[in-house]
Amino acid sequence: MTMALTPAPSRTGDTHAHRALALIAQHRLLTTTQIHRMLTPHTPPRKIHKVLVPLREDGLIAHTTLGGRSRLQAHFLTPTGHQAVGDWPELRGRAATPIHSPDTANLRAAHILTGVRAHLAFLDDARARGDDYEPLDWVPEVTHHLPDTAGEDRLIADAVFHYTAAQPRLQYRAFVEIDRTTMSSERLARKLIAYARFHDYTPQPAGRRGTIGEQAAMLAWQRSYPRFPRVLFILTGAARTTLTNRITDLRRMTAAHPLVTRLATHVPLGAAILEDIEAQGPQAAVWTPLAGDAGPRSWTKL
Image (cartoon, rainbow, N blue to C red; front, side, top):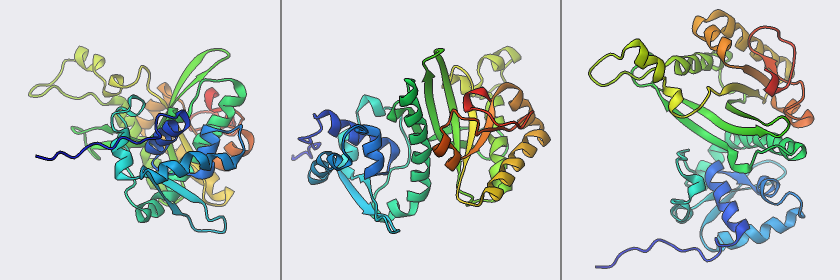
């Protein structure tokens, strides 16, 4: 009986090759420039090709060329690449939907790469500050199940990130929602209700209703997080007036819906325009709180 062998890539022992594969696996699609900024920001950009070309020759990654004048290449894992990284510890538990073909890459590129732009803004700022935030600390498409509640049966955060500030040493976690103005403002604001439901959600034991004490100890989010992550909306893709109006709608939802109002008493909620984050840095006063005083502030001060 002949057994199929798991491919053993010849080049993944190299630190840069290994890290590049892990980055593409986690983020699903990355441009050459984005990989360079994450992996080797202090070397000439052309040198990243010495990492990517062998991975392509080994059949571990493929690419698509994005539209527009820049003709950027965006890289994704092949089935062989997915098989190669399947048991890597740094990717354990990651369940984002993979990219399988150039056509899929083109269809999903706008949303995925917009999220990576936001991630890179946090990454560049963290490096400048000496904070602890690495390229794999942004985890896309994190699913939380809400099977026995009314409404949708799951909440999928566009990303969850983990960030540790150095001075003073404080740990932060955040759910991130990327808004490219491809959905209605009302539908965007309804995402706050989903987060509020998740905040209050207690899975019921099979066959019986839990006691009040059991419910207090078994909130679903406590199985994954020591504290409920703050919720950050990052908006782009329209005129500033449109984006500002959408932030206003998020604030109105927070004030009008009792579940979201209660969430806001326990969890920092904020929104910012992506171009402001990129230009001024995420620690700048570019974030609008979704509850209380609307004065702009840093994401850590929401």
